[in-house]
Length: 98
Image 1 (tube, rainbow, N blue to C red):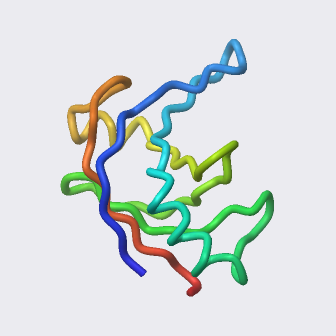
Image 2: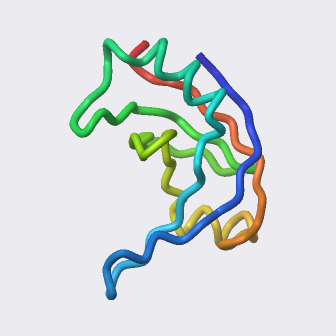
């Protein structure tokens, strides 16, 4: 399953020394993913994915949040694609293991 969407980069800074950047998957897209991925979720309900942002592609996991999945965006990718917290980016996600 492949999905594309736009989302805004946001900062999770729950720990003083660690800053992680994420996007929230739109709820309608998250509902579609949950239907397909439910039998193959991993620890913490995570779903393995391959992500494309601009010309960067990497593998990571979607993690369940309060109302949707969240997707971590690596610093190396943000640097390569010239984007940062507050920017809206277009992402393509391919679910693995489904």
